[in-house]
Image: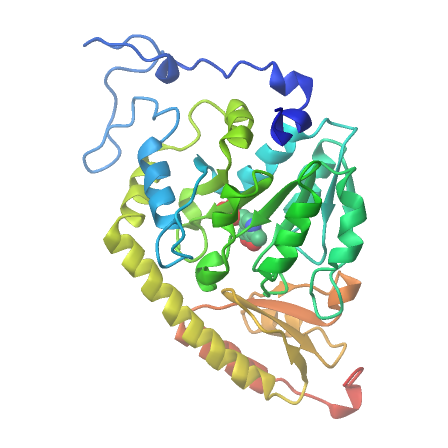
Length: 369
Ligand SMILES: Cc1ncc(COP(=O)(O)O)c(C=O)c1O
């Protein structure tokens, strides 16, 4: 039976033969003159030389990531899927769109407010983006998403969601996986999963080959600058995604750091960091919620909080004047008077809280309660 992936993938990708890089072709020998590298070069690091191209696919870190993904820290459910290392979750989004969507013809579905890259990547190849807004309390409007699935190649869900911070209940995701079984890839972006690890849906790939999960080392692992992320997907999906990935996706220095981060010591450090951050976040949420000009601090399962203020005065600008750079969300009418604040160290959050306490609040300026 033809897999959903084979049904969805455009002819041009179906017929694509992966680029035959020197590393992929391989060979055996003691003199390597097949990749136009310098055999000897200046050493910029302490001990490594960087003259050779890296592995065409870094299998060591992919296996380590798969082992981590099936560990008790997440759901403890062994995964039946393949892993692909990419340059951050952003590359995963772009790759999935370019693998399965025909430029200028296909459509995707997103549920705003959500991460902006899904629409940006779709726009970049002239896809239509159908928007099914989240409900007033930022839940998924499952009934409103369903009718769009049969005409959409990809549904992007983000859980926990950026910028709202909440988790999508697993039963909603399963309902949409069922509804889209014959028509749609459901991509769940789990960039923030380490802050709510038991809510991962990656184990469902075994039952739903139309599920793809995106992950990253940029958030809880604290490795945003090395640009490493992962795609977890059924083999039928990965066979096509892997065709489009550029020849040497992960730079060697990044692969070495990722490998260390995924060993037991690195994982223990990540878990400690995540727990510390959650404690700082919860204290910050409690203190900010008590401020008289704060309408709501939305419950967060991430390393940021979304705060809605009661006054039209832009608290983003106020904090900026104090040298505290947050993310203004008020360009989105659903997020009027909202600022997204990443959770930093105890010292950074104490300074931010003090700045907010010092805000010269005028009760006459309240626009909502
Ligand atoms: C939901 C979500 N997905 C993906 C990304 C991008 O992550 P990466 O650094 O791995 O490209 C971000 C970054 O903010 C994000 O919030």
